[in-house]
Amino acid sequence: MAGGVARSVDRRDGAPRAGDTIQIGIAVDIPEPWGGMLTRRRVEAGDPQAVPAHVTLLGPTEIPVAALPAVEEHLARVAGAHLPFTLHLRGTGTFRPVTQVVFVAVAAGISECELLAAAINAAPELHREARFPYHPHVTVAQDVAPEALDRAYEDLADFSAMFEVDSFTLFSHSGETRWQPRRDFRLGG
Image 1: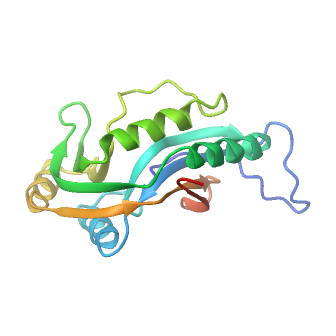
Image 2: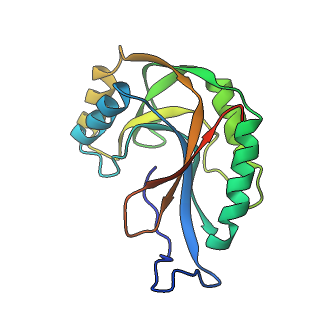
């Protein structure tokens, strides 16, 4: 999950005030050994937004803290309605020149990711206008020097990993810490 700032809800009484918000994101984690390797590659590229490797299902979204229970209920329903699936990552791609991003491509599991993302985005609290069409991928370099983008693109061109996806994760970000996993949602109930 990349960047984002939201007002913190950490206070002595622990109770959120009206208007308090939190930044959330939803993603499929990339398991070991591939997740750590792809995360290291992103750090080595000099990416200031380097976070653990993942496929985003919902990018950074600010919601009222009071909406979290309804969001979690919605995510549980979405997860229960979708079966586990195989995700195959293979090769690299880029969004250049539109954005300065190099990614590892999703070769299989694209439709499943698209269906999950659409179902997640259907909640009124989560619906937002997208800047770009949804394209499942694993970012390995973003907003770094062109040479670093080229190196990531070339070095990972032969990358391949295949694994079962049986859950997705809700992450949160208070603006004062890095993205933190909040809850996993198992597919198929």
